[in-house]
Image (cartoon, rainbow, N blue to C red; front, side, top):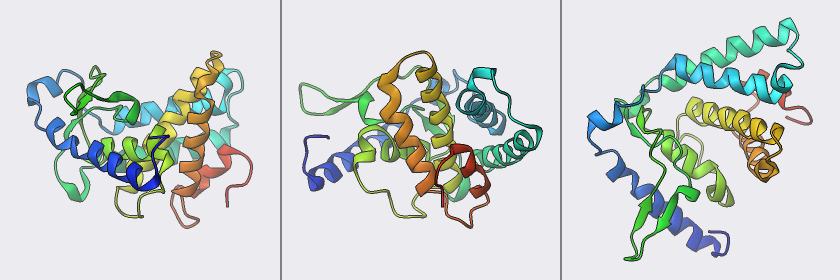
Length: 207
């Protein structure tokens, strides 16, 4: 992806997304081995973002007013992201569907690895992680409305917390991924969004 010309990148990312159709045909009994994404699950992920990204691993708890704002809007985001949305029922999702987990097999087909977090979730979830993270971030952002806004933002805030946790543990290879998550959050949260009040948590310019 990094070495490809822009048009080739678009072709590759489209090919990556086509594989999602096969992923969604996985036996439902296998996808149910892990608990499905729901509002409680999503909100718990966002509480980890608060802990690692803004409270320095618990060393600096947020002031009461900021903590209340985070809890209110993170809860709303979690509930909205957990709804099936216009696409319908929940589907099997990989949970970490990005270019680093897709490889070209010897016969030329794409091979997907790292299935341990497979579960049921929103149809947009894997497409969001593919298009907005890792190598997918080399392309222009998808057009507004292509993916459910709350799913985009919940995933971006969630991985921000994951990357901040890794950085706190000295794994500085995640710096670029952390910065990408911050950029996606800013670019996908317009001024009129219900979630715009969360932008100041990122610090710096956010208009």
